Length: 292
Length: 292
Image 1 (cartoon, rainbow over the protein chains, first blue to last red):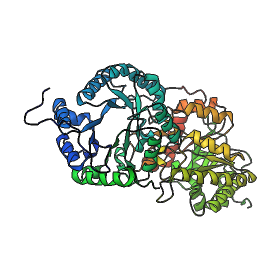
Image 2 (cartoon, rainbow over the protein chains, first blue to last red; image 1 turned 90 degrees about the vertical axis):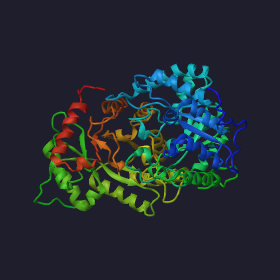
Image 3 (cartoon, chains in turn green, brown; image 1 turned 90 degrees about the horizontal axis):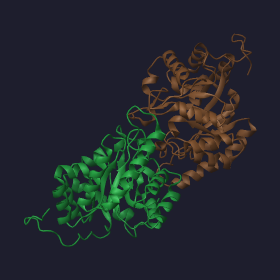
């Protein structure tokens, strides 16, 4: 991989806009944008971090994607996603995901672990498969300079997307797997948990919060339950409180905005980024008023 | 309240059909039936228990409802529901629910505790309101021979219907409230919980399982997330396993079938009861094969 003379490499990271330090865009939020669009949008908005999805990277080409973000001076805050450990090609695909994370220059691979295998109702067995899959992948990831970040998904996705449903459960798995494995705290997935304070404190004390993602819980849930997420401040979650818990637990990393929502996707990306930066400054930037 | 000469009182409880011992119909399952229809349907199907909803009781009239079920020899297994402790008339309405439970001859009042108050994002405060509401109601219930049964609802309902999201949390609240307060185990709401085995064992050991409700988790979730429930065996939940856990924990009470599903509601009630009894015999009756 060599730098193209037509696209001179940035030698310094992009300076974030005022109040936007450690804010990152997850590309799932701007689904209507190519990766090149998203990178340009971040530069213009003063957003210095970007979380990438593999499908967006694949359509651009891995080398070109890596060059795009590097040349723009963006930090790749995470790659989504490995996981789905019950799939027939899980081992191979997850190793590829680790390789891609390393090539993109991020140290964090998010794992969405997969639901019940087709036709199965055996949840304990599905959870064992996930535990074994993570444990098998962790040394490979570590050897490539990548930390696995297990994402507990909201329990409404237990059957079809992730049998890892709570932060406590994700932390148990991370501790079993070792080799730098940690967790993702995503407000949408964990906000309801009566154990939230305890488990965030536990995760922070162990240095296991590898990513912090934010979006809000909208009512009513839409027809596609995946898409009920909103901009920070538009829904039911006290996101500043969760951000404070994560900070008090010692997390000093990026805040990635990841919103799955058809209306957001139908909005021009520049407008979405304006909303996103405005909300970040209002609710989450250092010095923003904590509020209920 | 006197027995009408036109409707002679049954002096003995209805004998359940073979394999249907301790099976109860929750009237939410047969939404298209009046209470009188549901009572007649249970008698014909050999279902000896019935769980009542207050709206169905109200449209029939409390005295008439009580007479209907008593004359048919049915056991009222529970009354749904008290709760929603943040509502302005919560104290008064919950006391009325206790009175109605007593009048209907059931010892179990199910509590759906309510979500976040309108416009609030303060989940800890909402949970404190619920804890205080239950604690205030419990002595009144006990004095009237009624046990409160706290129902943890699936975390997807945390914002709008119940800030009590796990069995462990419900048990903490029940223990704090005392005066016979216990919990409902509903497969739909708790099946995903990594703590399920532990908390069912804890609940059983303390004698706090006051009701066991079953229905299945269907995929995909429907547009109205409330309605994604199916007949036992049609979805993702290993209901026989959860029934076995509950039985091993010492629960010897009724199994109430409570299904919120538009398609089920559009089906003639007699057909729904045929499906329901067939599934009970196949999956849940004593001697039914445990299966994954």
